[in-house]
Amino acid sequence: MAKGERSMSDTIDKNVRLLAAVAYGEASTANDPQEIGGIAFAVANRCRAWGNKTVSELRAFDSNYSYAWNGSNARFNKFMRTSDAGIAFDPAMKLALDWSEKAIANSGPDPSSGGYWWDGLDFKSNYANHPKVRDGFKWGDAAHNIFDVPEKRRNVIVRWQVKNRKTGKIVDGAERGRYDSVWVSTATHGSTIFWLHNPDYLKATGGKAYR
Amino acid sequence: MRLATMLAVALAAVSTGAYAAQTFDGYDAFYTAQAGAVFSEPVKHEAGILHSQPGEEGAYTDLHATVAGTATRIQVAPNHITINGRAYKFARAITLPNEPVGNIYPASANVFIATSVGNRPPLLCVEGHGSGSGEADRYQQIFLLVDPLGRRPTFLHLPALLSSCRAIVATKDGQLAFPKNSYLFDEAQGTRTGLLVSYFTFERGHFTPTNNEIRLRFASPENPFKFSRQDELRRSAP
Image 1 (cartoon, chains in turn orange, cyan):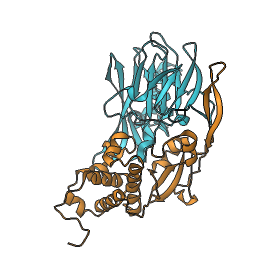
Image 2 (spheres, rainbow over the protein chains, first blue to last red; image 1 turned 120 degrees about the horizontal axis):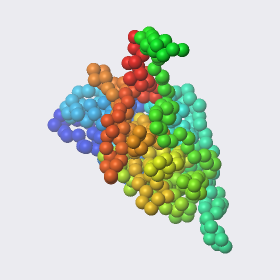
Image 3 (cartoon, helix red, strand yellow; image 1 turned 30 degrees about the vertical axis):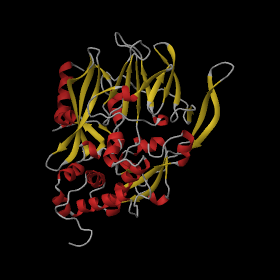
Image 4 (cartoon, one colour; image 1 turned 180 degrees about the horizontal axis):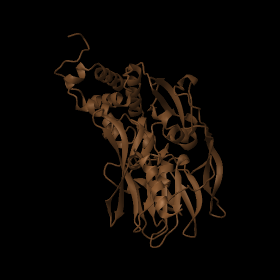
């Protein structure tokens, strides 16, 4: 057996399997290696940023992060049902597994370019009501506009509210910060766009990069 | 027009397929078109302004509205709402199994208010979304506060898939009902071809199905954002 190849008798670690299933399930059916790898890295990046959580812990803390793992994604379910040997013999599943191992080990390059979130075809088909459009987003690079949709900036000013010492009433105080979008794209591969929070948004709201 | 003539025209229209099913390209229009829809338009607020308090996590919106004739201050924060100073944490809302509660982005959240009707108390509903990926855009956090200024309001977290505050309806007997949606599949192809809209009520501390269902058919498989009512499709078939 060549170095680095998986033995048929090896058992796949549950977090590696879960991450590979998310990457396989969330990616488009084109099985683009960079797209699958980007999703695996985005999940692992967020785990690292959020106190080095495992993928299972991330799922428990924020199950709304990915709906592939709630049972409604046929590819995710198929991956989770497939035996270790079956995964090894399926090129696309094997690809997802390899990327999952690299992402957990943070063994670059990272196709998501440091992203924590991603969106697929719904970003185009549900553009008008898409959460990231409602929040405001901008392209980190114009080339990320793979769906040919307009950038949507939303200017927000955050003001401190403080108690007036004389009246005891809560009144507006100084400006805490401002931002023009919540989201900034980091990369695209296949039919997937990768995202991070805009640093201006984090600064203005005191938000966490990984929440 | 005489009744017999009107009936003949109607029957002819149905038999020739002239009664075309309405196609929707979004769920807001569909839900507000349902009989008994409780909420229509969200409370207007000053866009582009958020507030923050030292020592508190995140920023929040500050809205002013009238609820049951009372001036009411509503603050929407990432993990709770505050009604006239009384906080309701999302994590403590009553929810159905397998409907995870999550934080929301206050700036893009909507707040709806409905006045009391008959024995039904006033209602306040908040909808928003969290930081999800992929198909997370299809899920919305929905929180319903029944009798928000009362002594013991009921605080519910409603099912998230392709739903909204606008999906809540008042039934003929005065109950509140809301959908818990699930996909309809083409088993042979393994694709999602429609949505089953199944209504539930919350009575005496329990979620109960009403047996009222609507079937929606997607215009193309896997894309739930353009659809028609399946029962109307059947009615318009030649």
